[in-house]
Image (cartoon, rainbow, N blue to C red; front, side, top):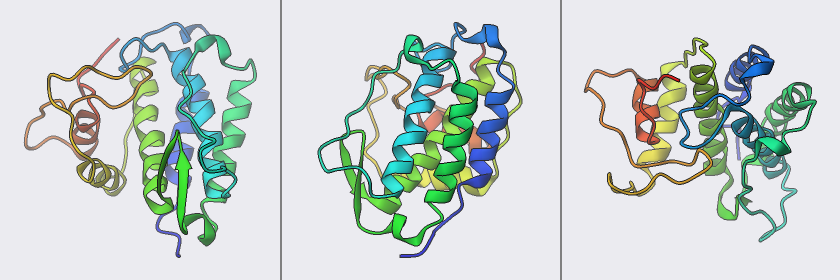
Length: 198
């Protein structure tokens, strides 16, 4: 298998958002329903480690389960830890073997190249969530957003009246204008309102 894309631009963008989060913002709300900045950072800490293990084929079948996010579980050194994990994730997915075969993340088994797109989507969407929650600007190249939109379009859509899952998971799509940007279309497809503000 060949490496289909490089995670570095999305990882670097998220790292920049994390570096600019004020220390007193951990209790602030995010676009993820009932999820604070601190809880979402705990999720980011978890998924950056998990998707590195996915790339390294270090997840035993049946061993991964979705973790509940909890601001109280966020390690004190989260800035340094997540920054290091982002760099490890980038390097792990630069190995062609990372893209081979089936892998598991969060209790779901999928082709590794599909899970790579799930990881990219996590980096981009949670970067947007945290940037929006803390008043930062956030731009994503069209081609990155389109890759994630294609991932969503390959999955069954939730009904518009379906409840939003907890912990920042995807909800039913939010309508947007036909001329909305690729990032706004991705945000809306994930169940978030692109116009959300704290």
